[in-house]
Length: 470
Ligand SMILES: Nc1ncnc2c1ncn2[C@@H]1O[C@H](COP(=O)(O)OP(=O)(O)OP(=O)(O)O)[C@@H](O)[C@H]1O
Ligand SMILES: [Mg+2]
Image 1 (tube, rainbow, N blue to C red):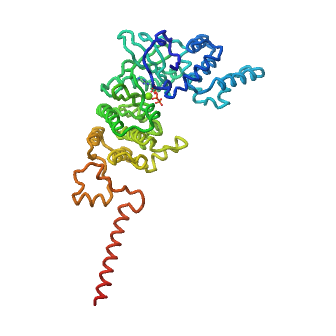
Image 2 (cartoon, helix red, strand yellow; image 1 turned 180 degrees about the vertical axis):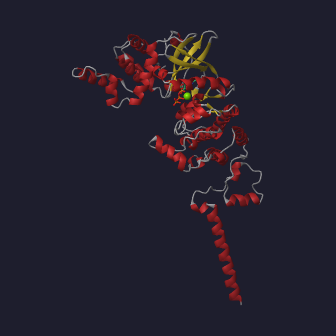
């Protein structure tokens, strides 16, 4: 099992039987272990990398040691690459005593500046060796843009919990800290089987932390990465549970604002839990909304057009869009809009029409495709108005029927068929048997003009025949 040092790691960390597959620990191809063990065999560092990093942390000068060890553990560098970088450092130090390994790793493009920054943050958390009263930190579960999440044991109740710890540098940012506490309070107001429960939010030394329910499983992001595409019924069941979490949150005035595969936890026995209400904000909290006006929040691949525009009054439709983009990704293996830069992706969310998901995955039912397209409408008013309506459609799809709310856009041939009564009361699968307009010839207006042309030709023919007869 790959390791990353936590806050005062207890010996229990070595004994834990929990198979944690999420975050940086997921190791589907086993590469990390291979490289890690190579390194252990060949290096003169202590046998157990945990001891090495911990020792380095205690000494207060071992960031380079930790960087090297963590990169090996995570399979990001081979021991040969690391040895080469170390010899460059040794050479360079003869001229430039301050040269260090992380600098060389960045130069060699083995590490990006962003990864380096994140590792420094994690190291800082480590070095502080803070004890969080009442909890024993067991191991790292993962880290995101702003925080690191650890698995811990809550001593009083003898249960496993997940603790999100902020790096020290955030302590000086008042507005961020306020938001962090708000996340805790917001999450505490929500009580739903599909939402990760919030237990506590507090401060230990210079670290602020948030204690929540531990989900033993993986994130939807990990699953998509592994399987690329999920089976349609599986995807529908996941979407239904997230929609149910959203229904609960929306009815209490909260918009999540950051729906994406990394924030959807897949627990045991198919249980889905929505995590990270970190960007959630009370619908009524105008002051906070205005302070952020003009700044788009969220991850570009799943962000709604109105968030990109920095709209202040966000409605449930913003989360429906994020869930639509997530469902698109789950069922097609692709995000709806890709691009070279975040700004390119955001522009595409604003302007481009999405490639119909059933054109990307021909196995996807037309009904599911209609639902996804409705969730991804550019204008919030064209999307589902509530998570309850979405659940209604998902239930129909799961029962093999047509969605009720989605699917307003049918081509003329489908309308004609429907009017003739042939397809009435048939599942969406049949209703969308008619090829979807993917060329200008399929557009309703073109079909109408062509019918008119046909009619005119027919009339001309009649006239000609009439004359010929006369
Ligand atoms: N309650 C939890 N139980 C188990 N693992 C969790 C829990 N919450 C978070 N994690 C793990 O910790 C990782 C980091 O979570 P975090 O919310 O800090 O970032 P993220 O959502 O992955 O990314 P970003 O910062 O971009 O939103 C997650 O990807 C997940 O693997
Ligand atoms: Mg998260």
